[in-house]
Length: 356
Ligand SMILES: [Zn+2]
Image 1 (tube, rainbow, N blue to C red):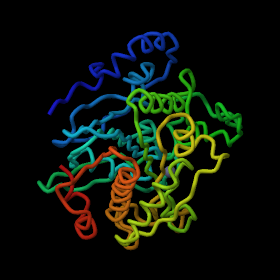
Image 2: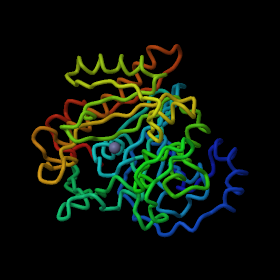
Image 3: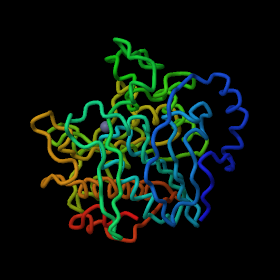
Image 4: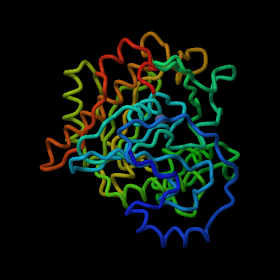
């Protein structure tokens, strides 16, 4: 396994970026602080570890920088980007990405995985229940505790300019409440010289453009009673892939609704990656009881109806079916990965059983 340093500029795409990175350094904003590190142990499938700042130099040393894991198969194929933690409290998205990094083996194509897409939000407790957990702990098969950040929907307010009353989305000009300036999934496609959150988004778009990503999948969660829970949202260009994936998921006992991103969904990943890059954009929403309003909130891990393991399984199976569907519809395209356990094992064993 090759594990280059986090700030490696060794890949072909990084070399192409050299000039831009130097230029961008002059635009560097005083983005303060660094986030604590995450306990992520990469498995044998990881072929390279990069940093998001490799795609946008000014993120270097800021709380918005985050590890990017590449799993490259021996067979040629397409390229996929998988995002967890765009909203850091939507913990099934983080843990599903983590399981890919720790356990998946890619046979064909390239899979880029970012478990903490908004790394600043990972350590922000805004919006969480006051006496609720700030970390989640799982015991791995060796009996060792693995501790993970349990964060917020928003970038830490200490990490960028104070919110204005109104956030004006760039470039559409759409107006949103001021705090949405710190919502990674409202600021896409970002801005090279914007706020920390806009720069994180910009770096993700640079990754997609420079690495030739074909499919971008952004994992999220929603309250189980919300219309969005158990939903697959697709850019209109990708609707055939989404519908085929959902039909196959139904055979596995998973029922998802499909929705096409509407033109007015400015700032949202499925819409903006589809509009501003060649990639097909998807967003998956699993049902998370911890996102219900205070008083009705369930346990993010052990809820009897929607335990974390079931939600992680939903995310991973949906990703798998999206990739299979795209491969079926696109000659010579393939990205496939496998785990050393079956997805049904997630129905009975605790999450720690699948961690390193
Ligand atoms: Zn979300």
